Length: 90
Image 1: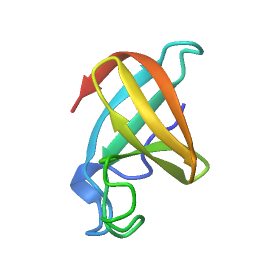
Image 2 (image 1 turned 90 degrees about the vertical axis):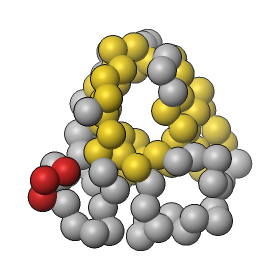
Image 3 (image 1 turned 90 degrees about the horizontal axis):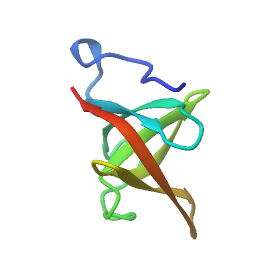
């Protein structure tokens, strides 16, 4: 499980709004995701990924979270596709 290290009511200006959570289908792990901000990733770097997914230990990855699937940038050239369930928007 990986949750945001902050809540929307008490976030700094450089932290994106937490938009929701989902459960990864294969392993059942829960993740939260937030709106991407320019503080972590410049707007012109991979703009097709509008979200950041909290993956644990203070790490985030760029992603495009949809209703039942997400694509995530794992490395500069490696993109993962996850099937998700229990997607809940806050």
